[in-house]
Length: 300
Image (cartoon, rainbow, N blue to C red):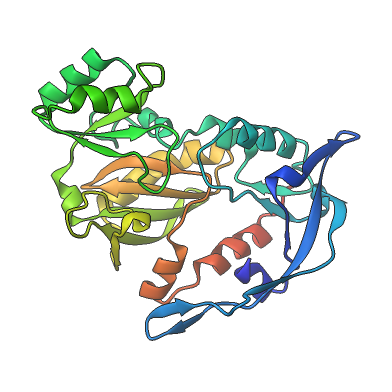
């Protein structure tokens, strides 16, 4: 939003519960937003208080906009899915939706990575306790992830000798009713979980998220510290593997997670990390994204 405003565009906002379809058109109660951009002070982003002002709400067709960004955090619940169905009624010849509603529905942020078999660590998805136990015994250690979580929520480290194993699986799978992802544990996770931002399949920046204290997760939301990092040749190869599929599915703005040279997640709903990359690399990735939108109108 800051980048769009800086580059001379109007910025409007709405909420998912303000979306409607009327006469076959996606509409919403929109409010114009005037932002006070954050400033970098002593290496930290500082926001004004208040940092935005809202104008008078207006009932409008969403396809009057040049672009619509959906930035709702997971989990992808039923209301979340219904919002994407409403966004389907924006004419793609008039307005670009980032990311594509169909793409968001197709790309569960855990499951989507499974198709890139040359990029991912050994992984299973199951709600069956015996299947998970067999995988864990074979690998010696593993990481369990809910399929619909975010920001490290619900991620567990599994040890074959843990007497809580049965309870952990029962809780995570809701008594065997909900599948979970289980990946072989990558010791390189101690060195960091790299977030790479992709724009139309091309990597434009990265940040390393490093676990702190006794926490094994590197997510910033659970206290992981961030560090400047380069994108390796292996990681660029992973991006190349993903690019055609991301473009096919209309997934323009994506954040992938890489640990030890292995793809672990493809984040398509509300990928984060831009603030940290901007600060560490002295870049303006938000403007890079908006400029790409400017240069690629919907009819292109």
